[in-house]
Length: 204
Image (cartoon, rainbow, N blue to C red; front, side, top):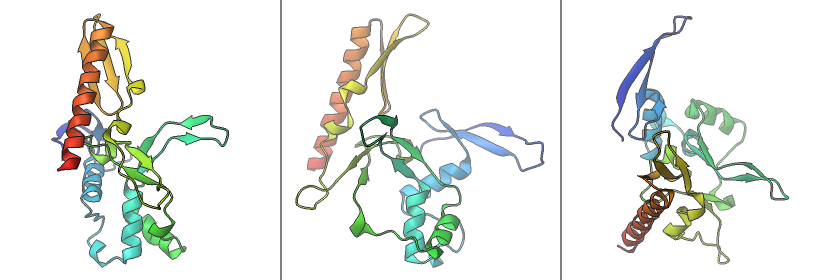
């Protein structure tokens, strides 16, 4: 897990216990409880209660799906974009899963039409939008090329108040330079290195 730093304690007027926020190495603020839940989910050891090991397989499978949800790009039937890819979660995932299972909801892998794939060498799953894949004509889940995750069209270059140019990519990469062209080129080099490293790892 990323290193964390206690930022502040917040006391609410309704006398609830203080909530400490921690900063991840990506600079995002989250609660320790949320960080622990994500860590458990990513490691396959989701445990909201001491009775988690006693839960039925149906409840555990659904709770793991609800703890961290990677939503793909959202478009209308005519192709108009409604929302960008995002990552969300449901609080008390185990409790919600128990309720939904009692309502008849189940995870059926054989009915899966779309599957989320994490970015090779990317950020932890809670901060990674990854990409979604579908089955090929043979009914198998393909292994996407690492280049599919690092689209050059997603690079954005902006000028800072200090006069420098900063190129950023939604996969968590950034580069700064004195000119717009140099910033863009530096980020492209980072993308190339990330892609080559991912391909090398996949071949091992």
